[in-house]
Image (cartoon, rainbow, N blue to C red):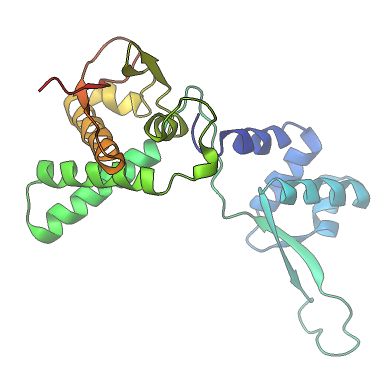
Length: 230
């Protein structure tokens, strides 16, 4: 599954409770951070209920907290700052099967930026950006995220980014395309980007006789990792 999948599922699940969801919707609809008293009054729940559920939303990373005194009150005797709630800066999304359109967007944005800035063809810039992204995925992969057993770092990185790798007779097939909708509409572009990204990932790990090749098929990613036959 994609990075932080379990945590994101827990965060979304926290909104399944109706009172908690209503409090969240109220907080994020405000232009300024709000107090638990204001949230309780707006949603018609008891103060202690608002406190419990707002703090649960903070614990799940959906809301952030800041402390501030009311306008005009400062210095000694002003009392403790009020605890205020606002939307978290964290992005939360859950997709089944896993999709990584954010990753595709970063590769494409980098390619367009380089092509415009340096005057190189877009397809050349896209190949470079995709390979660089593959190397970066391996570089940023936390060692503790690797599973025990015979799974190597390449398949661990692919699994963490939604590709659902399956090793069969020494070849790694990718059961899911993280860029599915884009690939359906812009097949040649996206499949080429996928190939270069996985090439970059393999190169960063030391290819060791492995290579990525196009192997399109129904309900799977267009790329397969196989042994170089040269």
